[in-house]
Picture 1 (cartoon, rainbow, N blue to C red):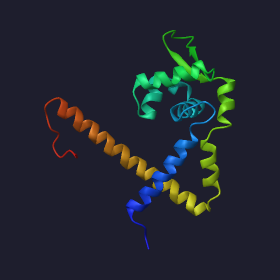
Picture 2: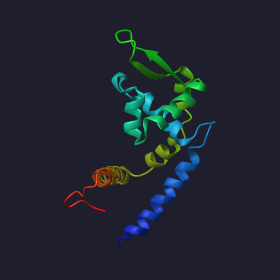
Picture 3: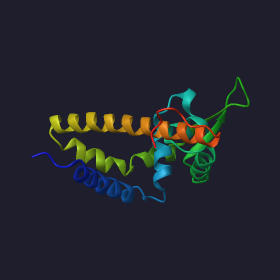
Length: 159
């Protein structure tokens, strides 16, 4: 028997709460861990406050605060471009790279790695589709709010 969507969502919420509680580790909060992961993997052209803010779905101000905290902890550095002195690239320090060895997300990755391959693939595909759906809905809500703020209403808009 297939579980209800609501029951599955509740289990997912428990997984997310567990994940969130794990993410307060080694003096870092979940946003700081996310930033370390992002800058540890980002291509050189995407190592900016704006690119991180877009990826993380937050404001430039919030992203700047997260990056400032990591910089203060010695985990990230700002490198000015040699070609364009206005351009800054954010890179992990050796301490930042070492911190990723203790990333709480590693525990979740280990739990996933312990699953049969078919389960792992099914979860990966389902989560990818869920994320795409949620991002599309968020984009539509943002578009509707923007249109509403201008005193107009988008035709056929949700919400």
